[in-house]
Length: 100
Image (cartoon, rainbow, N blue to C red; front, side):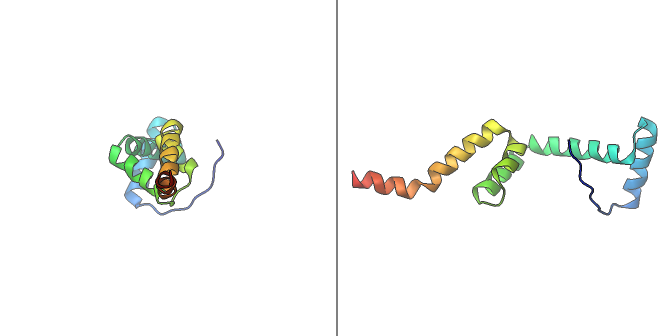
C-alpha cells in the first residue's frame, strides 16, 4: 500500500495516550494512529446510516464511483451505479414509453 504524508494537529493528551500505547505495544505513533483510524472507519462503514449518506454523496455527484466502492464494497456500488443510471435516464425512458 502506498503512503502519503499528512500533517494535522491533535490535542496533546491524545498524543500522550498514543505514545503510551505505542510503547506498551512496541509500535510507533504512526502505527497506533493508523490502527485507530482503521478501526474507526470499519465501525462507520458498518453503520447503515453512514453507508446511506455515502450513497447519497455519490448520487448527488459529490464523490466518484471508486470512493463509493471503497466504502460500501464493489458489488453494492455496482448496484447503486446501475440504479443511478436508470434514475438519470428516467425522463428519457418515460418519453420513449409515451411515444410507443
